[in-house]
Image (cartoon, rainbow, N blue to C red; front, side, top):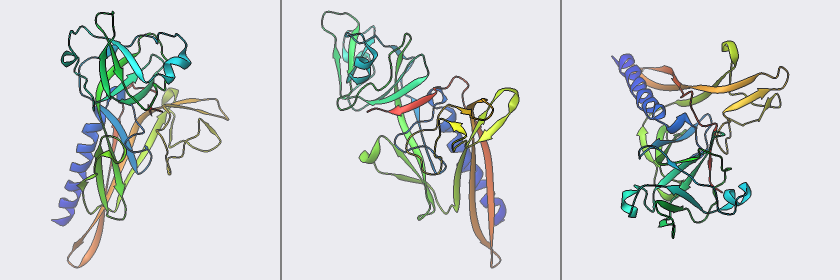
Length: 266
């Protein structure tokens, strides 16, 4: 009947969404193409294989590395086609501190006089994060979901900003809501921690970036880490002349080996 059909529809939507999220590189929540909060979320899916080792910037300091518009990587390749990264791709660089940044590739060039060394150029923005030993570079596909309350639909976008069109993936939804569940030692949890009592503070209702991986509660000093997402969908339908509403909620566990934060480059 209509009730069973509505419930099955909501369950299928959550299953597709959850499958993509579980495949996110290092389980990290990103800030592009959408800021991540209660009504939208972004993440990156691995496109290539294992990450390429990143070398320190020639001039040494972390400030110089953070501002540079290229990354030097080690690849056993003689021609660019063997690398698997081309202009137009996106890459995710993650350092050993758990910070990540998504970079749009504009060029891939051989480093002169250095065999198996290549520059991945991302003109227009810097590396953004600090260099640490064991920094890695991955080729990724960036995507996001956003709820459109006016159109009552869930839309999907792959790529950055307004460069690509949104694609509707679910219709006639009265609600799509995400909640971010943080966990401390001994299973103590808090959902969507915000306000002056948590550091760093984050606005989940009006997000501008990505939620922090860890927050500290001011009164107790407890440290909470992002462990799972709670996804809620609601749809209404007519049955025998009356309107009914059905809600479906599911939780998605995030990787315990996740990046602490994934930033857009700047």
